[in-house]
Image (tube, rainbow, N blue to C red; front, top):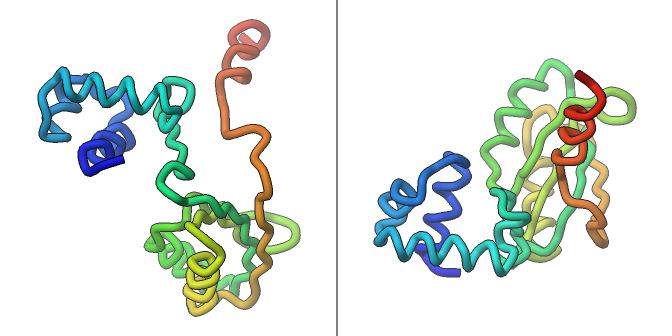
Length: 155
């Protein structure tokens, strides 16, 4: 992975339907270079299943954690706004049941994860956290089977 690969990935995230010529412009390379880089990213499975899902493990982000937060409800909007500012936060969901907010975090190692967790605990309104580590991912986020089922049965 180099700077060109990262620019390509960021362009794909911003616009998943970007054309290769636009991708080349965004990355500052020739069209053929962008096309070959895109193919290489797909072959190496940095881009999974030919789509726009990126394997962050390739970039060294190997620690995946799920954090349940208890939050002072008066501060909920401010907590969510603060969480959005942390680059390691991949998802934020307001939940029912045990805890108020569920956060999916990624880190390069447990030291970085601890640093991010401390940053989260310093957010005004966060009263408690519970962290669960993912040991192995058996199924990444997907939508194709559901859409295929819907196309066959639900309409």
